Length: 82
Image 1 (tube, rainbow, N blue to C red):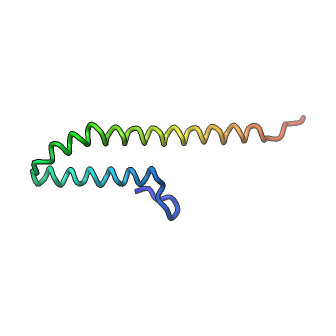
Image 2: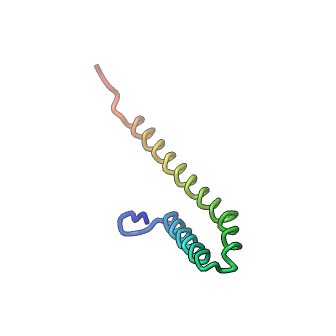
Image 3: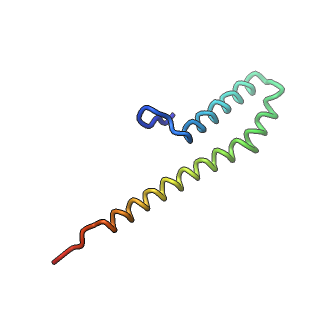
């Protein structure tokens, strides 16, 4: 997964959890377990929308921070004198 420095951020831990859940689904499906279908429906109806929401939130937060950083740098720039 994505390791930032020597720690894993909260959203990265969520993605790791989703990957583990998906791996569990693959194991159930490969063994043709009777709970695989219900687990698959839960993944499609609940987990995948959460993954999409978490990724969109992360992208939005990253874009907002970059915008604020650029705005702050533009305001702090020395005025050009000719």
